[in-house]
Image (cartoon, rainbow, N blue to C red; front, side, top):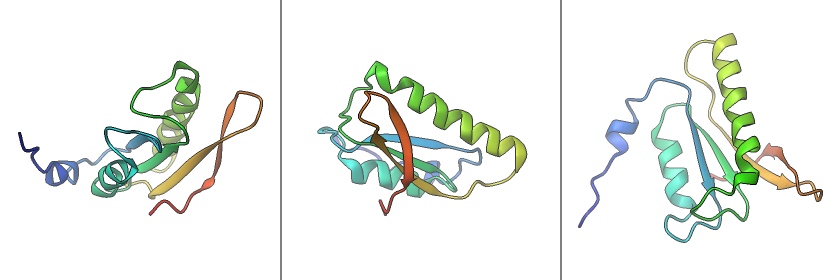
Length: 105
């Protein structure tokens, strides 16, 4: 079965959006997440190192924080958000924190 190109529909999204993708996803490698984020105007790409196709429960707070940040930014500055990419880095304590925007593009 051939998948349909969903980019035209993704381009019509007009709300702040977060694309979450693991850099170790064996089913859909990182370029798929990048392509999805590129297709959504102003979307933020959150790349989680070591994450595969499944979402580990310990990363839920990291993702919730990213969603909260986007929602707060949208409430303060209505309109299309600026595109950004963020790589999450391990702090060594088992917790994860947002690192500087990565050059994922």
